[in-house]
Length: 417
Image: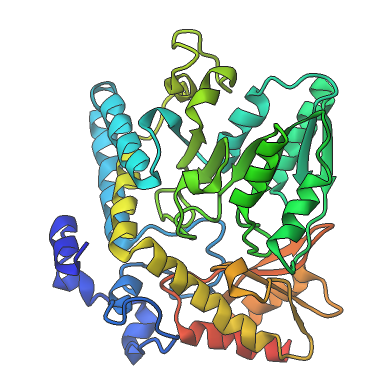
């Protein structure tokens, strides 16, 4: 979408374009980015940066929990909430079904899938719990997960293990693999004739490593095994469409890198599998083959549906490939320099084809909690500590609004920790 057309469609006027990044920055002027130029050389990244409205009180390098909506979309979202608060059930009863359908249509087109293969949820955890708890798994059936899967997904499988006596096999993955085959083989070695399903995290939330989902899916399918993909961090971050993953089931959170309202997610189920998955919330009214059987979620915020569509438009305005490259350039910028620091070990792969905008480092001889706290207390830099049996370190997730100056402040701090 052209910049002028986007401005006209979204109502962003000159006052918005030149709005300050923060109160602090307004007082000293805005410095231009000098990060490596990637993609369209004429693209206006300053315009994108100023579309967001981060706090001036600290540098947020922890955008992985969820991403902020752009200022314009958030103001619209507030307006949607005000309208709902005034019209109450009149609005919900007359508009919710239509708004949900319109958003599902927009999302289906965005993802390159059939309308009857997706359902809106509240987050990745809900999406994947629908599948993990809805599959017909019997005593002795095996599921393969990894030690770097998201805890909520591990817990969901472990609960089924306790409840239904399935067998959950947890494998280890290398943090800096030498090839895709190393990752594919790690899964393949765990598969037996009893294996029914595997869980693959597209972008590992701990380190940012991107797994070769399609290759893993092809291997699993050749062995008669279905594939669930956790795409929480890769969706609208890495440039792909859902069918590119080759998976049977995909769950994601739209409030992460798509920048949709908090509490919005998506579930994809390949059409031929819909009938065999039980809904998480009871439904006997819809045909078992109807994807809408998963929509019986109770009262939902109508404005979230509209907010998702707004977020899609801003993402399309930037462009998926351009956005991915920009986010990756942030990680490349700080990790390449940090690798030379005496006390820093970078847990993210060195190959830029294996990461994007999410990175991780650890400080030798230190626990991650105090290190993350020191970064915030001493340097006003927000990160998140990671301390699991497989990964120990600090997660760093810059966004499109972060600047080279922010990354330089991080590097300044890392040299002095």
